[in-house]
Length: 272
View (tube, rainbow, N blue to C red):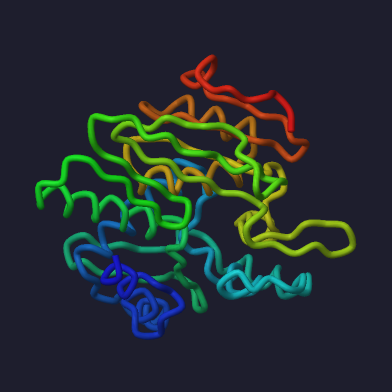
């Protein structure tokens, strides 16, 4: 996991992703097979979510605050300027040469919505190769489990830190949650958090929390972000269209929506 972090951590100037961010606006940059495959998957889900998940979000995420240090609302003009740099369609991946190139000067990648999930899936593969039959890995709330047993996972209440909203049973699955309650600040009564809508340049505001259950942590990590940005209606449509994927969406008013495969299986009130 540390090895993957060294490849994909945008905050590490020595990482492969940081090198891409420095050079890919000028020329095609040769990348490792591993980073290439992660970016290929990221672009696939960018298309699937109509850009709600956008791996080129870095110019905006950097503007709003590094490593969760959100403090101020940026200037409107600065947001507009950065918005023009965010568009996954301007990323060119060349499979034959295994290179990446940006169409626009100042573009940059942020793998914050996929790298953690990928690291979990990779680590599970390592454990299986070593003969491990039962395991749970928790990477800051992103969880992947393997084995015959069911694992009980508590879903945190988005407004009461010490309270568990529901208990989810996982068996050979992954779960990820995106919420507006981990990294945020309140200014003039409005909550600002770290999940930025690539279309507006401001924090997505139609959900409090989105939890995705699915077969891989890469998928659940991406979809938790993408569905949070899409909002309850479009987000639930996307969840229902994907095989083996379930979701819990808490909208901005506190209404709880469950995907069809979870209805009747979770003890959860309809409203927070």
